[in-house]
Image 1: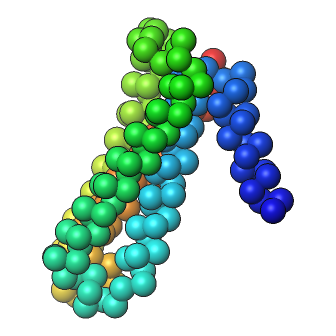
Image 2 (image 1 turned 120 degrees about the vertical axis):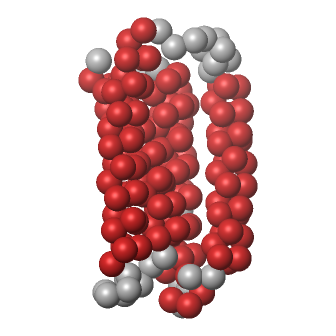
Length: 160
């Protein structure tokens, strides 16, 4: 009961707090991406190593991931736009665009590290078997880069 109350308070603060619309939007996107990453990791780590290498299971898991993400983002943006209808259709100003560009550069750097890691794992896999498929490593790297980039953007927007 206390956890539900705390979640409600956090959502009320996010929806009605003193943060800008862009901050609220990115913070909720980070939270949704974190939930999607958690669900994906739970699904991947519960598979056997043979099942992780199966392309049909990986494609099914990716389709589920995309559908889950799209539905959650549409619902989140609809709720946020309903509570902040005055700011929902405004374009980003120059400061917000510069902050978004800086956050994307951090996000892309993390994604590059993830791609290098997956390629290295693919090359080394014959000598030292790695228990996770490179496809899953790429998806996890993409989700982590999105979370880190969004968190950096929220932090930069808060800092000013």
